[in-house]
Image (cartoon, rainbow over all chains, first blue to last red; front, side):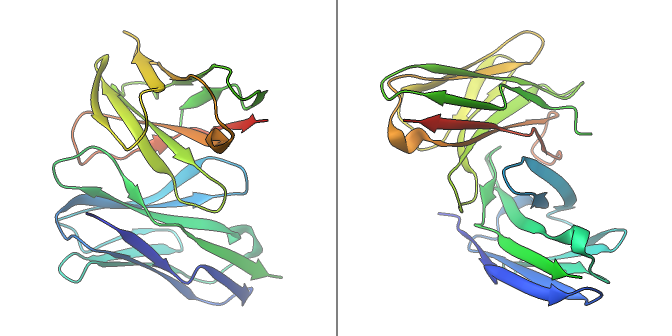
Length: 112
Length: 113
Protein backbone atom coordinates (compact mmCIF):
# COMPACT_ATOMS: atom_id res chain seq x y z
CA UNK A 1 0.00 0.00 0.00
CA UNK A 2 1.42 3.33 -1.06
CA UNK A 3 2.03 5.81 1.74
CA UNK A 4 3.31 9.37 1.43
CA UNK A 5 5.06 11.21 4.24
CA UNK A 6 6.08 14.84 4.38
CA UNK A 7 8.67 16.25 6.72
CA UNK A 8 8.64 18.67 8.42
CA UNK A 9 4.96 19.14 9.25
CA UNK A 10 5.53 22.85 9.83
CA UNK A 11 8.32 25.25 9.09
CA UNK A 12 8.88 28.91 9.92
CA UNK A 13 11.72 30.81 8.25
CA UNK A 14 12.79 34.43 7.80
CA UNK A 15 12.28 36.03 4.43
CA UNK A 16 15.05 35.41 1.92
CA UNK A 17 16.05 31.96 3.09
CA UNK A 18 16.40 29.03 0.72
CA UNK A 19 14.48 26.02 1.98
CA UNK A 20 13.82 22.38 1.23
CA UNK A 21 10.61 20.45 1.77
CA UNK A 22 10.78 16.68 1.84
CA UNK A 23 8.41 14.02 0.58
CA UNK A 24 8.89 10.27 0.82
CA UNK A 25 6.79 7.42 -0.58
CA UNK A 26 6.87 3.71 0.08
CA UNK A 27 6.35 2.21 -3.39
CA UNK A 28 8.55 3.30 -6.29
CA UNK A 29 6.03 2.11 -8.92
CA UNK A 30 4.55 5.51 -9.73
CA UNK A 31 3.47 7.28 -12.89
CA UNK A 32 4.37 10.72 -11.60
CA UNK A 33 4.65 12.97 -8.57
CA UNK A 34 3.04 16.37 -8.26
CA UNK A 35 3.65 19.21 -5.82
CA UNK A 36 0.77 21.47 -4.86
CA UNK A 37 0.30 24.62 -2.87
CA UNK A 38 -2.78 25.18 -0.71
CA UNK A 39 -3.74 28.45 0.92
CA UNK A 40 -5.97 28.22 4.03
CA UNK A 41 -9.46 26.97 3.17
CA UNK A 42 -8.71 27.02 -0.55
CA UNK A 43 -8.18 24.50 -3.31
CA UNK A 44 -4.91 23.13 -4.63
CA UNK A 45 -2.64 24.97 -7.02
CA UNK A 46 -0.36 22.78 -9.09
CA UNK A 47 3.28 23.79 -8.78
CA UNK A 48 5.33 21.11 -10.49
CA UNK A 49 4.70 17.74 -12.09
CA UNK A 50 7.55 15.24 -12.37
CA UNK A 51 7.07 12.17 -14.54
CA UNK A 52 8.52 8.89 -13.30
CA UNK A 53 11.25 9.05 -15.98
CA UNK A 54 12.37 12.54 -14.95
CA UNK A 55 14.80 13.62 -12.24
CA UNK A 56 13.73 17.21 -11.71
CA UNK A 57 11.52 20.06 -12.81
CA UNK A 58 11.95 23.80 -12.38
CA UNK A 59 9.56 26.71 -12.37
CA UNK A 60 10.84 30.12 -11.37
CA UNK A 61 12.15 29.94 -7.80
CA UNK A 62 10.91 26.37 -7.40
CA UNK A 63 12.81 23.21 -8.16
CA UNK A 64 11.53 19.71 -7.51
CA UNK A 65 13.61 16.57 -7.69
CA UNK A 66 12.59 12.94 -7.81
CA UNK A 67 14.60 9.89 -6.78
CA UNK A 68 12.22 7.05 -7.49
CA UNK A 69 14.55 4.28 -6.35
CA UNK A 70 14.83 5.75 -2.86
CA UNK A 71 11.21 6.92 -2.78
CA UNK A 72 12.03 10.57 -2.25
CA UNK A 73 11.24 13.96 -3.67
CA UNK A 74 12.31 17.40 -2.54
CA UNK A 75 10.85 20.81 -3.27
CA UNK A 76 13.45 23.56 -3.16
CA UNK A 77 12.25 27.14 -2.76
CA UNK A 78 14.84 29.82 -3.41
CA UNK A 79 14.81 33.25 -1.78
CA UNK A 80 11.58 32.67 0.14
CA UNK A 81 9.01 35.46 0.39
CA UNK A 82 6.07 36.06 2.76
CA UNK A 83 3.77 35.30 -0.18
CA UNK A 84 5.14 31.74 -0.20
CA UNK A 85 3.40 31.09 3.12
CA UNK A 86 1.00 28.20 2.54
CA UNK A 87 0.73 24.45 2.94
CA UNK A 88 2.71 22.44 0.41
CA UNK A 89 1.37 19.01 -0.53
CA UNK A 90 3.14 16.21 -2.30
CA UNK A 91 1.12 13.60 -4.18
CA UNK A 92 2.09 10.45 -6.08
CA UNK A 93 0.11 8.64 -8.73
CA UNK A 94 0.70 4.92 -8.20
CA UNK A 95 1.24 2.72 -11.21
CA UNK A 96 -1.92 1.08 -12.49
CA UNK A 97 -4.22 3.73 -10.99
CA UNK A 98 -5.49 7.18 -11.84
CA UNK A 99 -5.77 8.46 -8.28
CA UNK A 100 -3.32 10.53 -6.29
CA UNK A 101 -2.06 9.60 -2.84
CA UNK A 102 -1.30 12.70 -0.81
CA UNK A 103 0.94 13.44 2.10
CA UNK A 104 -0.41 15.52 4.98
CA UNK A 105 1.59 18.55 3.86
CA UNK A 106 4.19 20.95 5.19
CA UNK A 107 2.81 24.19 6.58
CA UNK A 108 5.25 26.96 5.67
CA UNK A 109 5.37 30.41 7.20
CA UNK A 110 7.82 32.96 5.82
CA UNK A 111 8.37 35.88 8.17
CA UNK A 112 8.88 39.40 6.84
CA UNK B 1 -6.56 30.16 -13.46
CA UNK B 2 -7.07 26.38 -13.57
CA UNK B 3 -10.44 26.43 -15.26
CA UNK B 4 -11.93 23.94 -12.80
CA UNK B 5 -14.92 25.45 -11.07
CA UNK B 6 -16.90 24.05 -8.15
CA UNK B 7 -20.20 25.04 -6.66
CA UNK B 8 -21.29 25.92 -4.12
CA UNK B 9 -18.26 27.26 -2.25
CA UNK B 10 -19.77 26.67 1.18
CA UNK B 11 -22.83 24.97 2.54
CA UNK B 12 -24.25 23.78 5.81
CA UNK B 13 -26.40 20.68 6.08
CA UNK B 14 -28.09 18.79 8.87
CA UNK B 15 -27.14 15.23 9.76
CA UNK B 16 -29.21 12.77 7.72
CA UNK B 17 -29.76 15.13 4.80
CA UNK B 18 -28.49 14.68 1.26
CA UNK B 19 -26.15 17.00 -0.64
CA UNK B 20 -25.05 17.48 -4.25
CA UNK B 21 -21.78 19.16 -5.15
CA UNK B 22 -20.94 20.23 -8.68
CA UNK B 23 -17.77 20.51 -10.72
CA UNK B 24 -17.02 21.84 -14.19
CA UNK B 25 -13.83 20.39 -15.59
CA UNK B 26 -11.17 22.30 -17.46
CA UNK B 27 -11.73 22.60 -21.18
CA UNK B 28 -10.44 19.53 -23.02
CA UNK B 29 -10.30 17.35 -19.90
CA UNK B 30 -12.40 14.18 -19.91
CA UNK B 31 -11.46 12.82 -16.49
CA UNK B 32 -12.81 14.09 -13.18
CA UNK B 33 -11.78 12.94 -9.72
CA UNK B 34 -13.25 13.81 -6.34
CA UNK B 35 -11.33 14.08 -3.08
CA UNK B 36 -12.30 14.68 0.54
CA UNK B 37 -9.97 16.73 2.70
CA UNK B 38 -10.54 16.76 6.45
CA UNK B 39 -9.01 19.57 8.47
CA UNK B 40 -5.24 19.20 8.78
CA UNK B 41 -5.11 16.18 6.49
CA UNK B 42 -4.17 15.51 2.90
CA UNK B 43 -6.97 14.92 0.38
CA UNK B 44 -8.37 11.39 0.21
CA UNK B 45 -9.51 9.92 -3.11
CA UNK B 46 -13.25 9.27 -3.35
CA UNK B 47 -13.72 8.22 -6.98
CA UNK B 48 -12.94 9.07 -10.58
CA UNK B 49 -15.06 9.38 -13.71
CA UNK B 50 -13.85 8.94 -17.25
CA UNK B 51 -16.24 9.43 -20.15
CA UNK B 52 -19.27 9.18 -17.87
CA UNK B 53 -18.19 5.92 -16.23
CA UNK B 54 -16.74 5.41 -12.76
CA UNK B 55 -13.31 3.89 -13.25
CA UNK B 56 -11.84 3.91 -9.75
CA UNK B 57 -13.09 4.26 -6.19
CA UNK B 58 -11.44 4.87 -2.85
CA UNK B 59 -12.44 3.61 0.56
CA UNK B 60 -15.77 5.44 0.81
CA UNK B 61 -19.21 3.93 1.49
CA UNK B 62 -21.89 3.63 -1.21
CA UNK B 63 -23.72 6.67 0.11
CA UNK B 64 -21.05 8.62 -1.75
CA UNK B 65 -22.02 8.49 -5.40
CA UNK B 66 -21.34 10.49 -8.51
CA UNK B 67 -22.18 11.29 -12.08
CA UNK B 68 -20.34 12.62 -15.07
CA UNK B 69 -22.21 14.29 -17.90
CA UNK B 70 -21.50 14.33 -21.65
CA UNK B 71 -19.78 17.73 -21.28
CA UNK B 72 -17.51 16.07 -18.65
CA UNK B 73 -18.87 18.10 -15.76
CA UNK B 74 -19.55 16.06 -12.66
CA UNK B 75 -21.61 15.78 -9.51
CA UNK B 76 -20.82 14.27 -6.13
CA UNK B 77 -23.82 13.15 -4.12
CA UNK B 78 -23.69 12.23 -0.46
CA UNK B 79 -26.73 10.66 1.21
CA UNK B 80 -27.50 10.29 4.90
CA UNK B 81 -24.95 12.89 5.92
CA UNK B 82 -22.89 12.25 9.03
CA UNK B 83 -20.97 14.73 11.15
CA UNK B 84 -17.69 13.21 9.93
CA UNK B 85 -18.59 14.16 6.37
CA UNK B 86 -17.72 17.74 7.25
CA UNK B 87 -14.72 18.51 5.06
CA UNK B 88 -13.43 20.35 2.02
CA UNK B 89 -14.46 18.49 -1.14
CA UNK B 90 -12.13 18.95 -4.06
CA UNK B 91 -12.66 18.20 -7.71
CA UNK B 92 -9.75 17.58 -10.07
CA UNK B 93 -9.77 17.33 -13.83
CA UNK B 94 -7.17 15.90 -16.14
CA UNK B 95 -6.72 14.77 -19.69
CA UNK B 96 -6.54 11.21 -20.86
CA UNK B 97 -3.64 9.13 -19.64
CA UNK B 98 -2.02 8.46 -16.29
CA UNK B 99 0.83 10.90 -16.81
CA UNK B 100 -1.25 14.00 -17.34
CA UNK B 101 -1.30 16.82 -14.84
CA UNK B 102 -4.26 17.18 -12.48
CA UNK B 103 -5.83 20.58 -11.92
CA UNK B 104 -7.97 21.21 -8.87
CA UNK B 105 -10.89 23.50 -8.22
CA UNK B 106 -11.28 25.76 -5.21
CA UNK B 107 -13.32 23.23 -3.33
CA UNK B 108 -16.66 23.13 -1.53
CA UNK B 109 -16.58 23.46 2.23
CA UNK B 110 -19.32 21.21 3.66
CA UNK B 111 -20.33 21.53 7.28
CA UNK B 112 -22.70 18.94 8.74
CA UNK B 113 -24.41 19.94 11.98
